[in-house]
Image 1 (tube, rainbow, N blue to C red):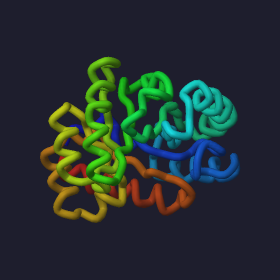
Image 2 (cartoon, rainbow, N blue to C red):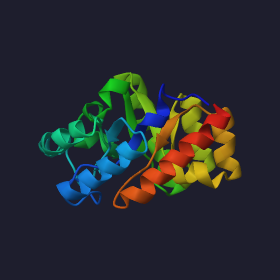
Image 3 (cartoon, rainbow, N blue to C red):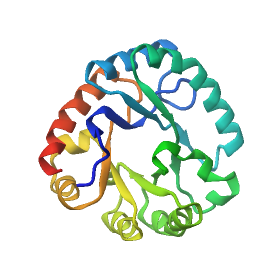
Length: 216
């Protein structure tokens, strides 16, 4: 399993920023999440608010994200946590119409977190977009929570050179497929996919990180 250096200190997938989606509702909730993250040793959080191409445009999303980061970063600094702005981009067949997706990348990782549609036939239609995103923009595509998709779609993504992000809950389940990915697939790291319950999310993350070390 390929892992980011210090992966146990990096939450690769989080809905920390308030008001961006159905994650944190306000700064108070965001600070509670940061407290819980600090308590389990997290030092970097990727802020990957949902980006839906049929609802959002890149410039508007970036403006809203900048505003929320300016509010949350001083709190994160208080807890010694570095925030990396990004997005969880839902891949859709007409995704190219919403703007330059490369602007939604996790720039420090030169990667972009992608959510695939949960319907197998729609996901396969989106694979060309995934491939173009990798080749045109020279970005590493990270597939979020692959256990939620059809296995053949995930295998196609891996054949393109994509890497996986496993949610803590998938690692802790130790289901056959999750274990196979941890042993053999390029898994970049673990995410909480935190939305509301910070204490449960970060407790699970800490346990999952220890378990994942068995397969690294």
